[in-house]
View 1 (cartoon, rainbow, N blue to C red):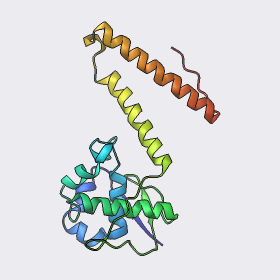
View 2 (cartoon, rainbow, N blue to C red):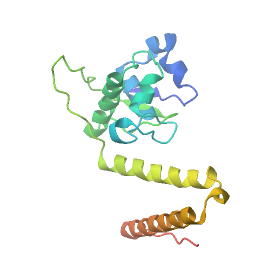
View 3 (cartoon, rainbow, N blue to C red):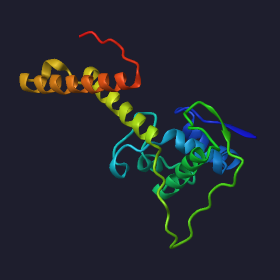
Length: 183
């Protein structure tokens, strides 16, 4: 049984670059770290997931040794997703200690070999969408000065936030856990 420590956002660059990368970041370790710091943010990975996660392209642009292309980042992330699906690993987050799979690391596809896309499990997609919605609402209250909005925009925001609240209430009822919200 092998374990590794997922670095925090502040430790990430040191962990994946330089001598430390050559000495410590083996395949499954690299896959766990990539998984912990990447997320699928939207169509063709164009949008950003909530920090400290990055989409695959942004992660590749960080210039970490051996992880400078979208394909390499996708390969390592896909390997960890496969390990989760097979029950060999659990989702990794920054700052955690994680157990590494005792199974062979997936090989790189050979030239011309069709690569099967690894789709995220439903619960991971749902959690990501809910996190994005929460982040958007938070940004609305923190970043956007409400006094700068005209009345028409305010009315539209109220209507959409009320619709969001109604859908959230319906989902909480379906889950059997309703929290009273006071207006």
